[in-house]
Length: 94
Image (tube, rainbow, N blue to C red):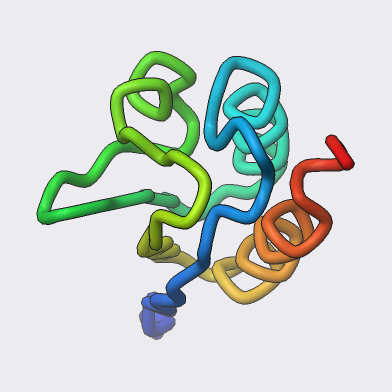
């Protein structure tokens, strides 16, 4: 029996002062790497893997921008909870 893949999409506002620079990108990659699901972060039609630090640095996630996070897989819900905490806590920068 095949299990249905979860596909969850949420939008987050970048709240930290310097946006998605190297440190927040590294935290996102570390968090995403703990899950088996595929996680994508997008803005203005462009989408990159949340498991790619280089991709995340190209997304132009400055303070105030809105990013769409999409997780596909069995543990998608848990992954989005962890990523949500990073955004809500301003990537622990303030």
